[in-house]
Length: 148
Image (cartoon, rainbow, N blue to C red; front, side):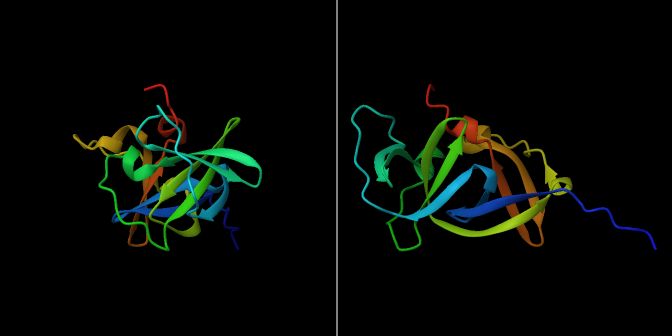
């Protein structure tokens, strides 16, 4: 009987913005928090909502809707802040909801399709079709490039 080699998977957190599902590797996620009071910081980009004090750590908060040029929505109970660690930076992303944690087979990840006119195009590293879901994988380093 032939042994089945285990397919390489990436464990990701899936979250929602509007009607699309996005994915971030679990290795970059420090936690998922309910929306809390955000202290505004003057002279920052519009998508930088401000900072929160999370267990004694001051963490900048980025509204991904704003970053991707999506229309704002009314805050509700499903809104979450996903705390991301990238290199030495810790930052929070405001998302519509954080859905689940799943394994994506590396072989299912395709390069980003060429679509002209999508503002978030530069932030997409690839897409993966899992069952009937289309997951958009994000380039965290490009989202966090605050020098634009």
